[in-house]
Image 1 (tube, rainbow, N blue to C red):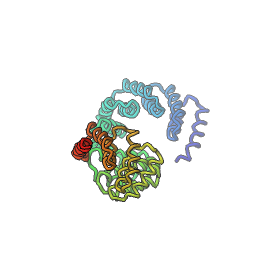
Image 2 (image 1 turned 90 degrees about the horizontal axis):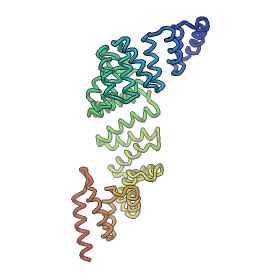
Image 3 (image 1 turned 60 degrees about the vertical axis):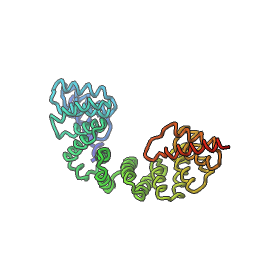
Image 4 (image 1 turned 90 degrees about the vertical axis):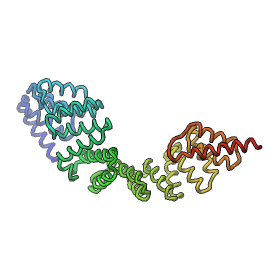
Amino acid sequence: SDKDYPHALKCINKAISLDENDALAWNSKARINQNIGNHEDALKSFEKALTLDENNVKIMNLISVELAELGRFDESKKILMDIISIDKFHVWAWSNLASVYATGDLNYTKSLECSSIGLYLDPDNTTALLAHVIALNSLEKYPEALKFLDHLLHVDKGLESLKSSNIHDYQVMLMRAELLIRANFEPEALEYIDEILSKNILEGADLVTCLLKKFVLLYTSGDNEKVINGCNEILAIDGNHAEALRGKSGALFKLKKYQECLDCCNVLLAIDGSDVEALVILSVVLLQLERSSEAEEALKKILSIEENNPNALYHLSLILEEQKKYPEALKCISRFIEIKPTGPEVPMEKAKKLRDELIEKIQSK
């Protein structure tokens, strides 16, 4: 256990003091430091062990891992290539090289080449599998990435059964949830996320990440009550979480709970007064509540931030038309038509009709 490490280090240091040329003792000291996350000391001890046992590829491989942990990726790759020059069938060298390319260099094509060799040598190597998944995911090959991740979970029974208590393992599981979403398996993704959450091991940023994935799925499903509940779970952890507040305000608007929607928008604007998305929702809610002067103020603020914001241009033109400020309304709606906003809910035909009506009203004066 963790409590044994200080005593173990004391014993190893005593052994080293009796024989400083004991490669096994230095290797043991390095592994203890590795286990407690003391990577600098682990690296020094592995390097000492290697001077006493030259060309030991196991020690060289462990040195490469520590170098990668310390962000020294080029040095890590060099040692791994040295191992491969000694033993071209060294599965861990290929697998760790794939990992360095995937997480350090972000060279996913190269990572895929190395992990493919690692998996050819050992189809169940978990390091090669994880690097392979990361590379495929980054290259947007989601179904293929999901297939290899499921194999990784099958190899590690604790992961497959969701019985692990290791937070790193749950981060791998979150990756699977993300892949299910990206591969368009939404119902399975939602079920899997709920199963992860039921284990009550995630906390802090990891828990929020998981809840956000759930929120995205609920939002696309159109179940607004569940969206609100999902957002409330996030807000219980972080009351100022902007994405959750936006999602909640959008769902409240769709349910016509306008006052609660306004409350969410005001929280967002207290955090960031130039939050355009919050200002758009706020202005539309104010229009629904027939508070047009406040809506006009919000819309003008949006346009001071984004002069071609289509939502603001369209709704401000309607307000100005009601106020019989026809030239100003025409300027807004003409700019709306000119920028050609796209999307299924864009009221382009209504905008063109309004433009024509405004031209007629101005000419008839």
